[in-house]
Amino acid sequence: MPQLIVRPGPGLRGHIRLPGDKSISHRAILFGALAEGTTHIRRFLPSTDCWSTVRCVRSLGVQISELSETELLVHGRGLRGFREPDDVLDCGNSGTTVRLLAGILAGQSFTSFVSGSAQLRRRPMYRIVVPLRQVGATIHGRDEDRLLPLLIRGGRLRGIQFELPVASAQVKSAILLAGLFADGPMVVREPGPARDHTERLLRAMGADVRVNQAMVTVVPRDQSLTPLDLEIPGDFSSAAFIIVAACAVPNSKVLLEGVGINTTRTGLLDVLREIGANISVENEREMGGEPVGDLVV
Image 1: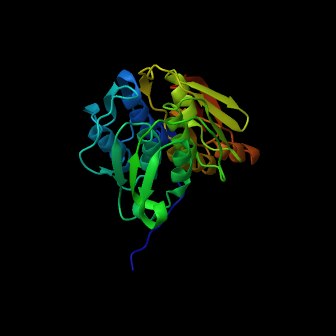
Image 2: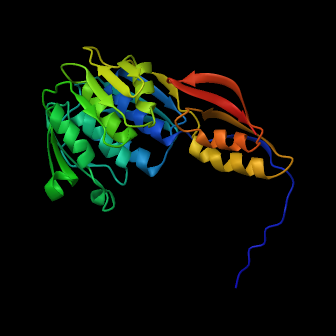
């Protein structure tokens, strides 16, 4: 039987530049498509799920130029510039793609069909169906409208106040994106903390997004989003493995450059510091509304 032998080694030394954050990569493509003009995205995460978002946006008539696998130009068509797709929008295995895209499609003047992989077609979608119907979209699907494929017929949307039964960044994002097309403020009440990447990036692109404790409001405006020159922050989830390894191995010193340090994602740092880890943040800055820093472990 093959054996794997692990021997102690010297401390970890060096610096690393991590791949871009997956959640923000999705949003950069979708929001760039809604902007009026060209959004330049660097450090895009070229994962299968993120390419599903690219594929769907292209099917809606948006041109996306690939300068490299991690650098893209999204030639936005504005809030109401999408064209009706001539086929089903295939979201692959990406729940982020289908849920955020549904919020955008709810505000369009045409009918779309959204589906995905066999696994995605088993995942419940009713948590986005309920609020998007309440704001004025027509949505039908399998299993009493709970499962993909979904038919989404956009309409004239109205602003509502919706209380999430459980905290969910994806459901919250779907409602807030629909709010860009509504006739009045769209308010989401959260029962607990959730990632706020949508709020941050929308605000950086000129949307009127207001946060008051557990209440997030989008106030619609007539103008489209403003395009950005955006570098995606490094993915903290990918950084976690290296951070823990550097903390565990004596005599280590590792620099992780340009990591996203959004507090909705960095609970690991708090835990490690509480048990004595020496982790510092240098060169703090913002990218697309997101806090970013260089981590020294």
